[in-house]
Image (tube, rainbow, N blue to C red; front, side, top):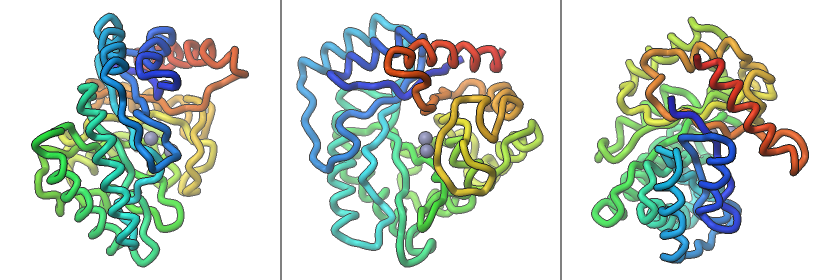
Amino acid sequence: MLIGYHVSAAGGLHRAIAEAETIGCNAIQIFVGSPQVWQTSVVDPSEIKKYQDALAKSKVEKVLVHSAYLPNPASHKDTLRRMSLKKMKEEIRTAHAIKADGYNFHCGSNQNSNAEGVRLTTETLNRLAELSDEKYPISLIIENDAGAGHRIGDTIEELAQIWQGIKNKKRFGFCLDTCHLFVSGIDLRTKKDIDALVSKFDKLIGLKHLKFIHINDAIFELGSKKDRHELIGRGHIGAAGFKALLHHPKLRQLPFIMETPYGGDSKGAIPARIKELKYVKTLAQ
Ligand SMILES: [Zn+2]
Ligand SMILES: [Zn+2]
């Protein structure tokens, strides 16, 4: 199975591969720049070469690039949507240059209404696909949200509405995050819950469009809308839910990527992840 982490590319993209190898991941997620700033630094060709050499020698088979935190495709503000498009396009260029398997992002939020948020997200994403289509045809992966405040794309119904408006469907796919699903009100604690989620997604969007899964346990309870990730099996979703998810025959071939907190102090962080990954692989057995 393909299981791994969001790993750190601090100090160079090749560092992410080194961390993945130390932990034992065969699927990873990275940022291609600082996630907190609008400015995008162009990644140096020599850094890309180092990364690709490291990747070729590693066991990593899937690499997902996660967008910076700032873009907001759903925003009611024109300027913010324009800045988001620019930033996302720049990140897509880098994601394409490193031959990543997808570029993952959230829909953002809209202060006016969900309907407007859905409409503007769809518009922004269609524009993004147009802007990057010929030169950088990487898969654009829409992630579900935890649904706090005016956030867009937390329910499968809302994701389906966005999907219906997407013109170039072969360019897009989805990533479901378990913590976000759970705190937005979708129970995942039993096999029955997982089956219900899979059938709902298949009915409203189509399972073949589901490309990645973020596996994170949740610090807060079902429907709380509070997006705080917990170590697998230690939160409100719990081991049984993850076991059912990892064993679902229609999901097993997908890459499962954890964005769980680093456990322990800075020295203990990597050993804690090695341990957690082993635990998740046991659940998947
Ligand atoms: Zn996520
Ligand atoms: Zn989250």
